[in-house]
Amino acid sequence: MTKVVAPSADLSSTRIWMERALVLAHEARDADEVPVGAVIVDPNGNIIGEGRNRREQESDPTAHAEIIAIREACKTIDGWRLENCTLIVTLEPCPMCLAASHQSRVSKVIYAAHDPKGGALSLGYHLHADDRTNHRFEIEQMNYPECGQILTEFFKAKRKKS
Image 1 (cartoon, rainbow, N blue to C red):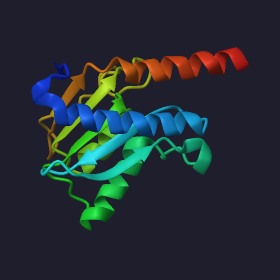
Image 2 (tube, rainbow, N blue to C red; image 1 turned 60 degrees about the vertical axis):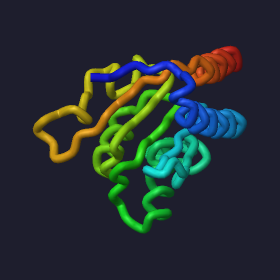
Image 3 (tube, rainbow, N blue to C red; image 1 turned 180 degrees about the vertical axis):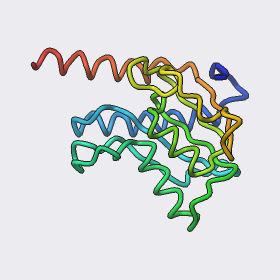
Protein backbone atom coordinates (compact mmCIF):
# COMPACT_ATOMS: atom_id res chain seq x y z
CA MET A 1 0.00 0.00 0.00
CA THR A 2 0.92 3.65 -0.30
CA LYS A 3 2.41 5.34 2.71
CA VAL A 4 1.56 9.06 3.12
CA VAL A 5 4.35 11.32 4.34
CA ALA A 6 4.39 15.05 5.04
CA PRO A 7 7.38 17.33 4.48
CA SER A 8 9.33 17.80 7.71
CA ALA A 9 12.87 18.47 8.89
CA ASP A 10 13.85 14.82 8.43
CA LEU A 11 12.51 14.95 4.87
CA SER A 12 14.35 18.12 3.87
CA SER A 13 16.20 16.34 1.05
CA THR A 14 12.96 14.89 -0.28
CA ARG A 15 11.45 18.38 -0.23
CA ILE A 16 14.43 19.77 -2.17
CA TRP A 17 14.07 17.03 -4.79
CA MET A 18 10.32 17.63 -5.07
CA GLU A 19 11.02 21.35 -5.49
CA ARG A 20 13.31 20.53 -8.42
CA ALA A 21 10.59 18.32 -9.92
CA LEU A 22 8.14 21.22 -9.50
CA VAL A 23 10.54 23.55 -11.37
CA LEU A 24 10.50 21.01 -14.21
CA ALA A 25 6.68 20.92 -14.05
CA HIS A 26 6.66 24.71 -14.47
CA GLU A 27 8.93 24.33 -17.52
CA ALA A 28 6.47 21.81 -18.96
CA ARG A 29 3.56 24.18 -18.35
CA ASP A 30 5.46 27.03 -20.03
CA ALA A 31 5.90 24.75 -23.08
CA ASP A 32 2.12 24.07 -23.05
CA GLU A 33 2.64 20.52 -21.79
CA VAL A 34 0.79 18.96 -18.87
CA PRO A 35 2.87 20.26 -15.93
CA VAL A 36 4.59 17.19 -14.55
CA GLY A 37 8.22 16.97 -13.50
CA ALA A 38 10.34 14.09 -12.20
CA VAL A 39 13.82 13.44 -10.86
CA ILE A 40 15.78 10.26 -10.14
CA VAL A 41 18.04 10.38 -7.09
CA ASP A 42 20.91 7.96 -6.45
CA PRO A 43 21.66 6.44 -3.02
CA ASN A 44 24.03 9.35 -2.24
CA GLY A 45 21.30 11.94 -2.83
CA ASN A 46 22.52 13.10 -6.23
CA ILE A 47 20.04 13.81 -9.00
CA ILE A 48 21.12 11.53 -11.85
CA GLY A 49 18.13 12.02 -14.14
CA GLU A 50 15.34 14.48 -14.60
CA GLY A 51 12.48 14.99 -16.97
CA ARG A 52 9.34 16.92 -17.70
CA ASN A 53 6.39 16.06 -19.88
CA ARG A 54 7.24 16.45 -23.58
CA ARG A 55 4.44 14.52 -25.33
CA GLU A 56 3.23 17.47 -27.42
CA GLN A 57 6.71 18.74 -28.17
CA GLU A 58 8.01 15.35 -29.29
CA SER A 59 4.72 13.93 -30.65
CA ASP A 60 5.46 10.91 -28.46
CA PRO A 61 2.86 9.37 -26.16
CA THR A 62 5.65 7.86 -24.03
CA ALA A 63 7.39 11.20 -23.38
CA HIS A 64 6.18 11.41 -19.79
CA ALA A 65 8.36 13.11 -17.16
CA GLU A 66 9.11 9.81 -15.41
CA ILE A 67 10.15 7.99 -18.60
CA ILE A 68 12.48 10.82 -19.59
CA ALA A 69 14.00 10.93 -16.09
CA ILE A 70 14.50 7.15 -16.08
CA ARG A 71 16.18 7.24 -19.51
CA GLU A 72 18.51 10.04 -18.43
CA ALA A 73 19.41 8.28 -15.17
CA CYS A 74 20.19 5.05 -17.02
CA LYS A 75 22.50 6.96 -19.37
CA THR A 76 24.17 8.62 -16.37
CA ILE A 77 24.97 5.29 -14.70
CA ASP A 78 25.53 3.51 -18.02
CA GLY A 79 23.10 0.75 -17.13
CA TRP A 80 19.40 0.03 -16.87
CA ARG A 81 19.17 -1.05 -13.23
CA LEU A 82 18.36 1.90 -10.98
CA GLU A 83 18.60 -0.18 -7.81
CA ASN A 84 18.67 1.87 -4.62
CA CYS A 85 17.48 4.92 -6.55
CA THR A 86 14.33 6.95 -5.91
CA LEU A 87 11.95 8.47 -8.42
CA ILE A 88 10.37 11.72 -7.21
CA VAL A 89 7.47 12.97 -9.33
CA THR A 90 4.93 15.76 -8.97
CA LEU A 91 1.98 13.58 -10.09
CA GLU A 92 1.00 10.01 -9.30
CA PRO A 93 2.52 7.78 -12.02
CA CYS A 94 0.25 6.37 -14.72
CA PRO A 95 0.30 2.60 -15.37
CA MET A 96 3.02 3.00 -18.04
CA CYS A 97 5.28 5.00 -15.74
CA LEU A 98 4.73 2.69 -12.78
CA ALA A 99 5.65 -0.24 -15.05
CA ALA A 100 8.78 1.63 -16.22
CA SER A 101 9.70 2.19 -12.57
CA HIS A 102 9.30 -1.53 -12.02
CA GLN A 103 11.36 -2.43 -15.09
CA SER A 104 14.17 -0.03 -14.14
CA ARG A 105 14.32 -1.53 -10.63
CA VAL A 106 13.95 1.72 -8.68
CA SER A 107 13.71 1.19 -4.93
CA LYS A 108 11.14 3.87 -4.19
CA VAL A 109 8.67 6.21 -5.90
CA ILE A 110 7.59 9.39 -4.13
CA TYR A 111 4.78 11.40 -5.71
CA ALA A 112 2.77 14.45 -4.66
CA ALA A 113 -0.57 14.95 -6.43
CA HIS A 114 -3.09 12.14 -6.86
CA ASP A 115 -4.39 11.42 -10.37
CA PRO A 116 -7.82 9.82 -9.91
CA LYS A 117 -8.40 9.59 -13.69
CA GLY A 118 -5.04 8.21 -14.77
CA GLY A 119 -2.85 7.34 -11.80
CA ALA A 120 -1.93 3.69 -11.55
CA LEU A 121 -2.50 3.53 -7.80
CA SER A 122 -5.80 5.43 -7.91
CA LEU A 123 -6.95 3.08 -10.66
CA GLY A 124 -5.95 0.05 -8.58
CA TYR A 125 -2.72 -1.05 -10.31
CA HIS A 126 -0.38 -1.86 -7.43
CA LEU A 127 2.34 -3.45 -9.55
CA HIS A 128 4.99 -2.27 -7.08
CA ALA A 129 3.58 -4.56 -4.38
CA ASP A 130 2.54 -7.62 -6.41
CA ASP A 131 4.19 -10.72 -4.95
CA ARG A 132 4.03 -12.40 -8.36
CA THR A 133 6.59 -10.00 -9.84
CA ASN A 134 10.36 -10.25 -9.58
CA HIS A 135 10.79 -6.73 -8.17
CA ARG A 136 8.92 -4.74 -5.58
CA PHE A 137 9.47 -1.19 -4.40
CA GLU A 138 8.10 1.36 -1.96
CA ILE A 139 5.60 4.06 -2.83
CA GLU A 140 5.10 7.21 -0.77
CA GLN A 141 2.64 10.02 -1.32
CA MET A 142 4.09 13.34 -0.18
CA ASN A 143 1.91 16.20 1.00
CA TYR A 144 3.05 18.96 -1.37
CA PRO A 145 -0.02 20.97 -2.44
CA GLU A 146 1.83 23.11 -5.01
CA CYS A 147 2.11 20.06 -7.28
CA GLY A 148 -1.66 19.68 -7.45
CA GLN A 149 -2.20 23.44 -7.74
CA ILE A 150 -0.16 23.81 -10.92
CA LEU A 151 -2.17 21.02 -12.55
CA THR A 152 -5.51 22.53 -11.48
CA GLU A 153 -4.53 25.95 -12.81
CA PHE A 154 -3.23 24.49 -16.09
CA PHE A 155 -6.43 22.59 -16.85
CA LYS A 156 -8.63 25.48 -15.74
CA ALA A 157 -6.82 27.74 -18.22
CA LYS A 158 -7.16 25.08 -20.96
CA ARG A 159 -10.93 24.84 -20.39
CA LYS A 160 -11.27 28.65 -20.60
CA LYS A 161 -9.53 28.66 -24.00
CA SER A 162 -11.81 26.03 -25.50
